[in-house]
Image (cartoon, rainbow, N blue to C red; front, side, top):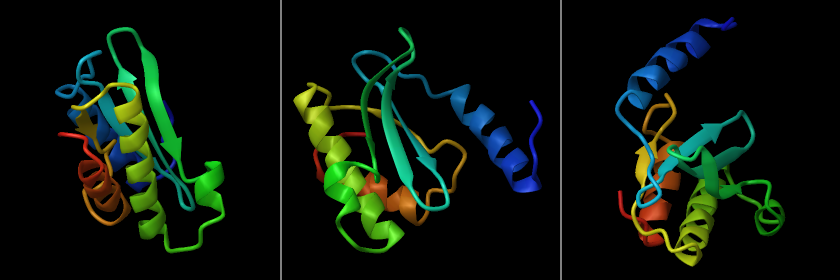
Length: 120
């Protein structure tokens, strides 16, 4: 795998280290976060079957219209994913920060998901 920059390589190494430990099951799926420069995406994944159970992003219809900072948008995405998980019958997850620091947008998304009822 060709990694372009030093920061991407650092994140890739951290990501591999995290994924050795964190694994999602049907009872407790892995909640993974992807953060681009403008948007934020989150998925609840069952690693045993390799399927995405629930997904949410800042590009969803209700969230695109709302204005705010990227951190505020991440907070709204956290609430949306918690609500979708509750509808799917998921209460507990394993958090995978995907190599990003637990800070800023990733932290606000996680805290909003906890406030929404997810346990991790």
